[in-house]
Length: 225
Image (cartoon, rainbow, N blue to C red; front, side):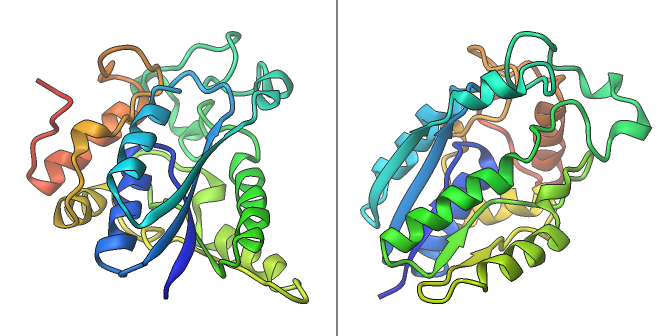
């Protein structure tokens, strides 16, 4: 039996990864983790629950309350707290595209560390997370280098070591869209907009990247009507 932990934010990448693991990799037993860290786009957690509830292979879905992150990161990221507004992608300078203000300091290392503890407790040897090769901007904790070094640390475990896998780390978002459709993802049940709200804003970095991804895949985004 294949079993693993999957980080499921409710965004298009993590939801595509969840369905890919179940339908293409034939994972039998999934332990899903989502995180409420005070993100402005917390609506994504509703979509994470919908997708996890849909799949019988998901044996457990936990949403961890990490609101302390909002308190300690206030003023350092536009995704948490009320100090900094989420910018439009066009207003981010070229010099800042490699790590824009939408970056949440050290988020992925924290989340993956928690996932490693959870994986050990559930006797899972693999953790999946949805890092992908951003087309328009980038974060250091979504890179192959980061993934390799995190696995070097995880390999120090003397008993129940875990491996972190990111199947999409070298794939564009358009390729992720294709994989999602191939694996039955309902993209109307994903959320991408960094600003939250009832409808996508269409101008924040995440919305623009999503629109371009659907265009490159030659598909229609069901959230845009």
